[in-house]
Structure formats: C-alpha cells, structure tokens
Image (cartoon, rainbow, N blue to C red):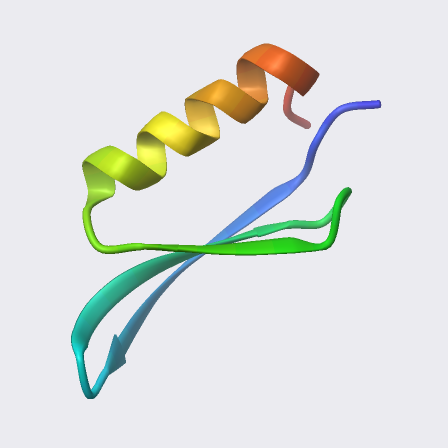
Length: 51
C-alpha cells in the first residue's frame, strides 16, 4: 500500500515550520527546513511509494 502525504506550512510563535501528515501511518512530522521535509518525503516514497 502506498503512502499518502499532506504537506502544510504553518506560521507560529517559533517561526515557520513544514508539517507532513502521513495518512497511512497517522504520523505527523514537523520540519524547520524544506530540505529536511523533502528528504523525509523522498525516503517515504522510496520505501512505500506515493499516491
């Protein structure tokens, strides 16, 4: 089964962060940089595939 990810950019008190919701595992991850967020998304895509 492939993973489905939702990516949100959130402005908060601590500045901007990128939030990735993995709908398959119901995991939520926060990242401070786009590089880190994209690295995570790429890893998920390689392991599970994306839809």
